[in-house]
Length: 153
Image (cartoon, rainbow, N blue to C red; front, top):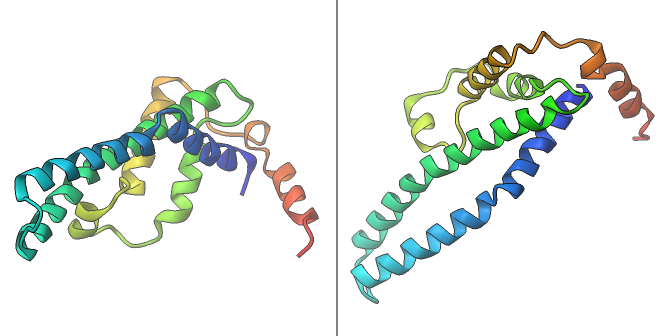
């Protein structure tokens, strides 16, 4: 809906790339796979394979969530040095969170932290850094909407 939100999402993805989250996760998964093949042998039973995959998957969920929080924090840092509102991520999460509250099972298996939790973390950063509420001067809503409206269908 505004440039600040778009800038926040882009900064978040840039943070993932700069922090090498995908590369680190793949390296860890590869290492765990090698270790499991050594422990279970060349022909593990179906139960052993399912169990190891389940435990490995659950173990990497926390790692993935930690990466998301770190990318949120770096996005905030990047935007603090820019003309855009550093809390733009909040508007993105407000938009995607929907009306439903998250169930315990959904929270357990999610690769990303819940939007409500991420909003809370960004709000803490805004408070700690004494960032005032957003204005048109750092959201750039009108300019963004004019740009969107100029694109032919």
